[in-house]
Length: 84
Image (cartoon, rainbow, N blue to C red; front, side, top):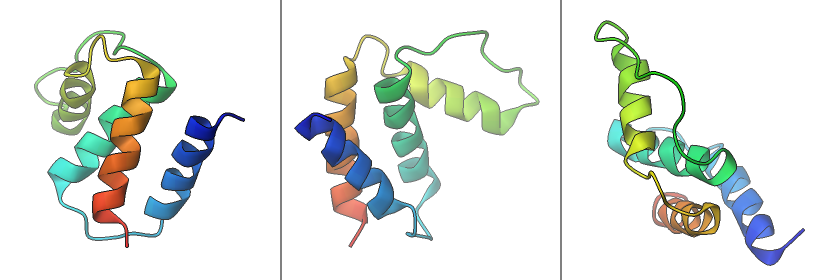
């Protein structure tokens, strides 16, 4: 496992037990995680009545074109500011 992949895995483990994060922080973490693990957002944007799904899709789609490594680095940095 590369150093970056190990730090990404460590960040995931570090943030799991944290509770009470603001919705915008959780959306940002979700979006960076998806970009790092899957790449660009795929599929159709959820409809207006799926508010949660639409917010998640939109947050992920904002990172279109970001490399997986850059998304991992951004995720690690974000976790570092919110996990103690």
